[in-house]
Length: 121
Image: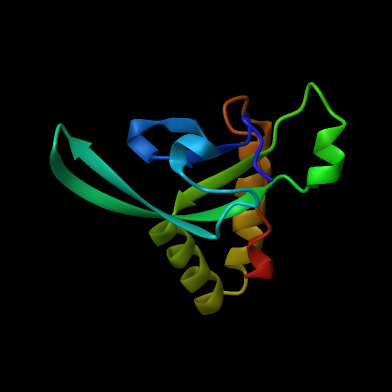
């Protein structure tokens, strides 16, 4: 079941982070693994960006039903970034340690509170 405040958060890099409700994106909860976003300029298609979900809330529909001050979210990054990180880890096993340190540093940064375990890919 998708609640009104379930959302998808997209990291557009230089364009910033955008949070959009699942209903506005046109997806149901639980969120899909991949989403393609079309960037439009009026009626003209500028480009399509593929995003991959790297993290999402584990709250079930039953748990959510009893909560009034909670919303569920899914975090998406550009799929090309995920592929680059996966390739880096395959080519250099020590890169997973570096990426873990980067994730920890990002978690300490107020704008980005996230941690991603790159070793699980």
